[in-house]
Image 1 (cartoon, rainbow, N blue to C red):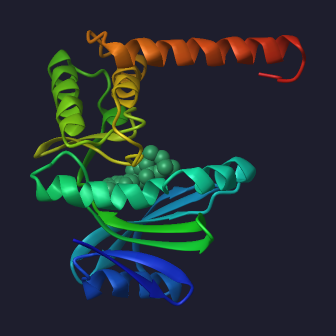
Image 2: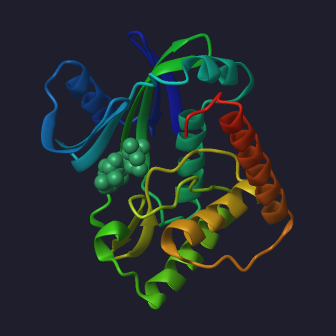
Length: 235
Ligand SMILES: Nc1ncnc2c1ncn2[C@@H]1O[C@H](COP(=O)(O)OP(=O)(O)O)[C@@H](O)[C@H]1O
Ligand SMILES: [Mg+2]
């Protein structure tokens, strides 16, 4: 169960109100975090593998710097994706989902509904990213396809099931870096089409979601081409 509380300037969501997760947040905020490895360091995103009382965990810091105006507008009408993600993950895991990492804590600094700092503490997945297993065998491709379909049955989508976000572990295929977006027939079709695009896993399901997704994509491409022709866009 997820508990919502205020800790200093942060709005915090903690799984099972567990104090170990809160301690990990405090250690991070006070610079006492025990870092085992830096997993990603980019403009908006930093991800560390850290050591805690409960063993290794992953801590992600996301500070949006681009498309701020769009994000602020979206925050007025849409639920925060990370907030949805922690609740959806908790629900899926309590119903037996094993293909995703658990999320232990989410801390956000907000102005109204707009979160301008996100700190996510999560389960460490010990495995190998698909990007390091190329070429991908047909057997593995079939497993990835099945596991993505299972993920959808838990009312969750990956949002980006590419080679970095798909992992092989001793307990099977798992997806990391989930989006928290709504699981609709269109977002499910997008997941399947991304498997086709990035992993060469053919999509055979041509439902309503598929046709709507393709139409949205074609419309976006046409607008992009028109903008390019008009010189409003370089690439
Ligand atoms: N739960 C996790 N378990 C193990 N490694 C992870 C986990 N989450 C992220 N990582 C590692 O950190 C990298 C960056 O994290 P990710 O959440 O995918 O960031 P981004 O949003 O920038 O893609 C991943 O490609 C992976 O190597
Ligand atoms: Mg990623």
